[in-house]
Structure formats: structure tokens, C-alpha cells
Length: 315
Image (cartoon, rainbow, N blue to C red; front, side, top):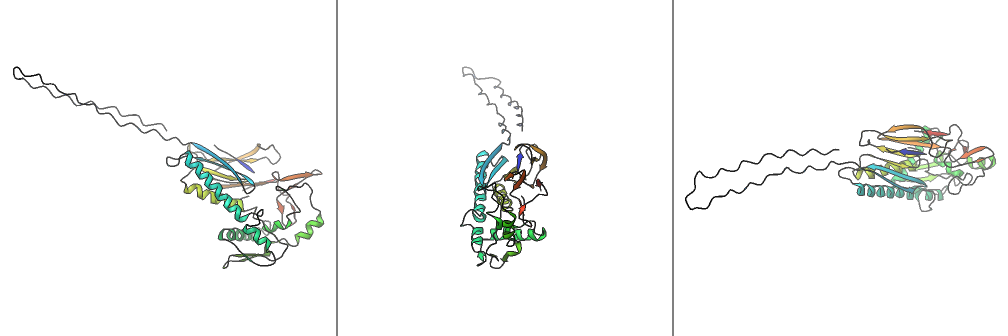
């Protein structure tokens, strides 16, 4: 799944037909009896052509919200069946869907399914819903094929590194990291497909779906907008974006890749996308600098330290 970018968003009526000539008036009789009143012929009403329907002009509608600790952005073009009001209602429904996923998979609420798994670490398996189970199973598969470079048990280090709302510009010591690192590893996640249970083998092991849940939430938001009848739109949740269809003029949507060392709205590249996902992760969003060294939230699970191979990666 996907891993900050800002999306750059970006008919005449038929002419009336000429009115046909009315039929000629009937001729009066050749002669009329003496003393009789002169016969009058009533004029025939002129038929009018039906009025042409006004041409439909798509309107671009924007929406935004906040969920999963990040900014949500939407844009879509209206259709003859989905006007601006219905489009905004679809955005609201998509935001509600993202918040529903957040409630299942966040580590910031003790009642979430992920928090319950963490609370039972080393003790007992926890039964979860199909969605949470599927996302955790996909995470384990990704760990396997990436040889552990993607690992949701990085959360075992939580509290040592603080880059979220609790950001604290004091990096942990190597000794503190090494002590926790022994409990980190995706192989500590035990899954039971039949019972839909998840268990963490060691009490100290913890998981977070921060690297994958937003991508899943975007997928669910896409389904909501498509069900509403929208065919040209984009959805963005932090660094995860998906664009559906093309703009009414036939052009593709455009996404900008932020310069990791530039200003907030400075981009060094733009990509055209249609019917594809677009994800960027960088070391500049949640970070701090101590003694000239940058520390950020993308942790290499093999070392317990912030990754240093790249400043930014886009998929």
C-alpha cells in the first residue's frame, strides 16, 4: 500500500432549429349569398420549436477534513446526475468512512482493535474484524517480501522516538534503542486465519498500522465516492493520494512532489496521474534537528534509527 504531497488540481448548447412556415390560410368561398354576413377565417397559431436544453458544464468541487492525524483533501467534478450538493455530501461520507477505519486501527484510542492487540501482547490472542485482520496480514506479507524493512512492530520503539503530537526533540541513547530492539520483529506477530485472531508473542512487542492504514482508508474513501456516482476525482490523506479518471477537458490530474529541503509549497517535480495511487514519504514532515543532524519519523526497524538512505521516496 501507499506511504507529503499536495495535489495540483486542476458545452455549448445546440442552436434552435428555424421555425417552419405556417400552413397557408384556406381560401374564402367564391361567392356568398346576398345579405349574408361576410365569412371570416380564424388565423392558425404558429407552432414554436421546443426550447433547447442548456448544456451541462462540470463544476469542480473541493472538500477537506482531518482524520488519522493528517489533513484530508478532496476534489471532484460534478456530473449531470451528481451536482455540487451531492458531491459535498459524498465527501462527508468519505471522511466518515476514513474516521471509521481510524477508530479500528489507531493506537491513540484504547478501545481500538490494534490497541487491544497491544494490551494483550504476550498474554492472549485477540479476535479482530475482517478489515483489521486483512491489513495486519498484508503488513506481515510486506515484511516478508521486503526482508523486514517494512515492519509494523516498529511501534515497539514508541516512547523513545516522539514525532507525533508528543514531539520531543531529544533522541534516545543507543543503549535505550538496543534494549527495545530485541523485541522488534514481524515474526512476533501470530495470526490465525480461521479464528481471525492476532497475538504478539512477546509482552514488549507492539504494533502500529501508521505505515499502511491511511492507504487502506483512501481505498475505502474511493469506494464511497464511486458509489455516489463520481467519475473524476482525487482523494488525499497526508502523503497518500489516489486520482480517478480524467478532468472534463481530457487532461490527467497532476501531483507535485515536494522538495525535501525547500519551502512547504515548493515542488521539484510533477507527475500526471489517472486511475493510480501516488504516495510520498519524506524526512521533513515530522522531524527535528539536534546538533545539525535530522531525526524523523521513518524508522528503520533493523537499526531502530531514522532511515538515512533517502530524503524522500515516491511510489
